[in-house]
Image (cartoon, rainbow, N blue to C red; front, top):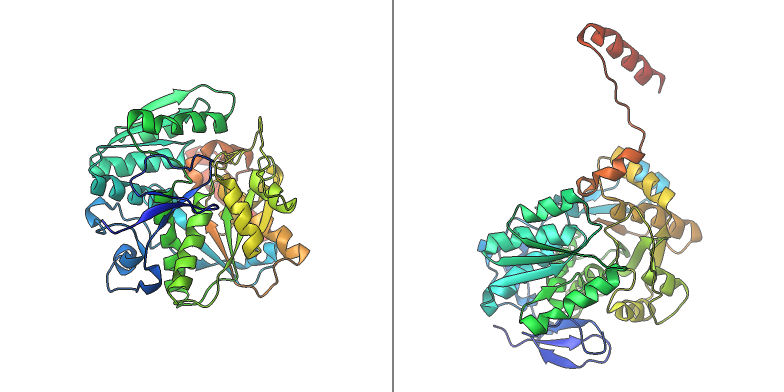
Length: 407
């Protein structure tokens, strides 16, 4: 094991790397501090994990624990999306190409490596869907016992996608997901098990890989903006941590500006950034189709606000109507994303219209999760589906072709 430790992200208090609790006593986020990161260099290797091993806190890269995560496509946006947003230099980082269809797999492989190197036999998480499925799959791959806490509103299809991997599921009734999360995370020290959330320091190490992949794909250049749907905050801070470490190692000369995007109905971070507040603005009893963005009062959110102030980050929100519109626009461009990912398009359009983002800025939007994660929402879209009998087939095809010609 490398000589690493955990550090609280605002006060700088140090903790052992093996600490089970994911936050400091004052609820500050923790991050991994790797001594000598300024000397880290990129190595040869087929996997991103191998090439950037010196930037990671683990002793080995453990390819045997991988399900093929990472190395996701960076794709130029279609003319439709460029026109809608007003951003000409628009790129999409397609994280739906990960094994369980979301960016969460990057954090899950990091947690599996941590468990392997610490000799732990169990991993646990609190989730509303994506992370639970990811942790269950990677836990199965690593031969770990997996315990998943869920709020009772999680749909059955998402629960089955976790349970099929052999995970033990505990559905928790509670008035607020934020309260359920805090109660579950508090059990770590009592039972001596590592309970991971979306903002945990080990998961953040996995999310750094997105920064390293963007660095390689852009041949050492840095995007002007990276647009990230944000809930528990670990994803956006992981990407930024990766760029900070590349900067510390002298491999890049500037940092990207991050863009926090949330649903307008649940925007505790974005609202605080707009209000120039250093405190999260809690949201309770909200309803949004962007269920993946469910943290109404994320622990450690003050760190994101501090970074937004220090590094001039932006924030955007999307209404429920805009989310549905954006999901359909992504689909018409070939990307079926979940509503949480769809928030990015409308938010980016508003930021471009306000002048906060310029037409020629290089903008990367992260597509965080597949639309297959939430099929119920698809019923809200008008679909061009025709039923016919076999004897009526020719007429229906003729009508369809005529309608195509009229477009």
